[in-house]
Image 1: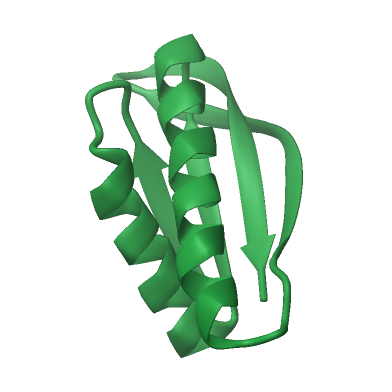
Image 2: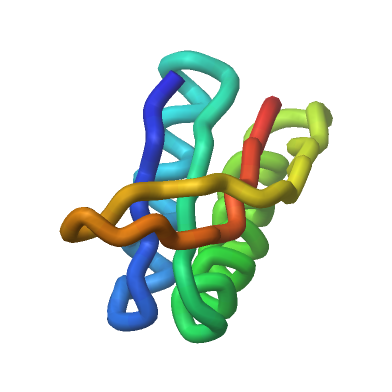
Length: 86
């Protein structure tokens, strides 16, 4: 399963393309976001990816949000994890 890290400066269209590609390849992708801006960009990207993926098929995508503990620069951070499945 591919893990995509999304920042507040990430382009939602680019992230959506990466989500769609990962779903075509593996059928599942995990996204990590730390901070409100990153979560916002992630949710926008998932909405765009949904439009892309569901346009070509009748299979809807499923999104499961949750928390994830990450170590960044030696510091423990809590982020939001989105598991997106086809």
